[in-house]
Length: 355
Image (tube, rainbow, N blue to C red):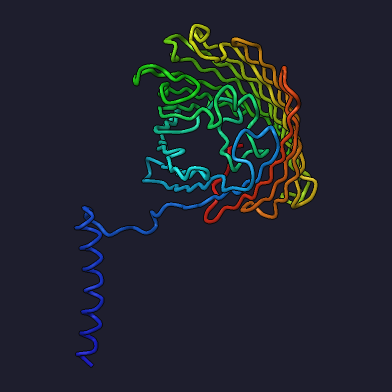
């Protein structure tokens, strides 16, 4: 009996020693790994089918994107969020977002790393969380297909008022974003946003924001971007199974000084608007539409408008099947149509999307 108990003790001691040695010594730590500090992990996959003359490339059925997200509180002082994206067309993997934010600081919260800039409403939304399958034309043509996303430092201040008001100010790298394409690595751009949110009723909220950004561009002059957005959201007291209506409107205007002197067909002034209306008419069905208008001034004047409608089957927050169709009209060209079909699935934890 004593030999049996001795063997059990030896086995347990060896297990504790091995874990302490390998995780503590070989990995450079002084304590065992705390499994409660493991990050929340999720994987999102998008499969896309697209047809029509409005689609420039990648027609047919394809893997659109795979996105992996890792989030966790590092300790009582910092929170980390890392998102890796794999493009379906090329298989190229890149960090879509990788940032660390502070916890518990009085008055201000800081975010450091690579992230979608807090400009307007749509720029913050990842591909899989878009209200429609594609981004609005103004975001595609003014900020680029991959949105306004670069590295920097952002400070958020919650203004002490009876309603929600958040002031966001950031200094970001201007060279690595389509919005600026600065000539020097040290070129910085400023991004500022003031956002307000009011509860109109127990079921209805109103959000209004103003955004501004400026920085050096590839003509070695200043670019400026100004935006405003308005969102009204109604969610029935029944919760997930009840009626929900979201109406989002955004206006963006840009001035890029010096671009007319460059020997390439680029715009120097432009503006655009979009309006999206989405409604949940059944516990698992959404319907909606979007109107776009964009006007860019360059060597020639380009004016584009588009109308798209969508129906989405959303059985849970982890999956959706969406069908979108629409027309695009551009100055001097024939109308072009597009039809998009997207399957969207998420496995693992599912962090909340931007409001």
